[in-house]
Structure formats: structure tokens, C-alpha cells
Image: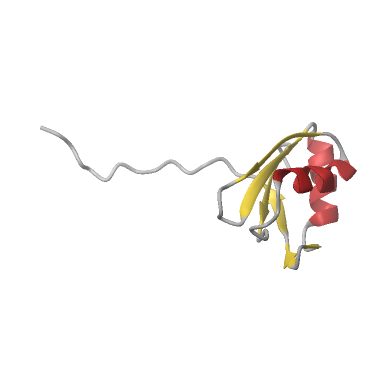
Length: 88
């Protein structure tokens, strides 16, 4: 694992930022929690790579509010290709 940011997927839509922060704080200092709208996933940034790894190992595959969470290292966003629309 190279970073301290984690992807958390398969979340219940009722999970709050505070609930995720509380859960992940058991494994270190949480710097940021961001749930992406009503998409069922979010991102957690821990204060170190070691803490992120520990949280990932402990929480991946565990249940939260009736859903099995997927916890993995966050990947950088993909670049979107231009579709060739140009104004002349």
C-alpha cells in the first residue's frame, strides 16, 4: 500500500460521515471522511500509511448496517478522454 487514503464501498445509504470516522478512528487518526452522495461509497484519509493498512486489514469484509464493506486503497481518478467535440 502506498498511500493513506482508502476507498470504502458497499455502504448503506444511511451511513454518516461521523459513523465512518468513529469506526476508522479505532485504527488511527482520521484526517478526512467523504461519502460520495447517495452512491454507497466514500473515502477515508488516515494520518499515515501504516494506519490505513491496519484499518484496511481489519475492516475489509466486515458488516456495517447490514452491508459487507469493501475497503481498499484509493486509486487516483482516471483521466477522462476528450470525445473530440470541438468548436470551430
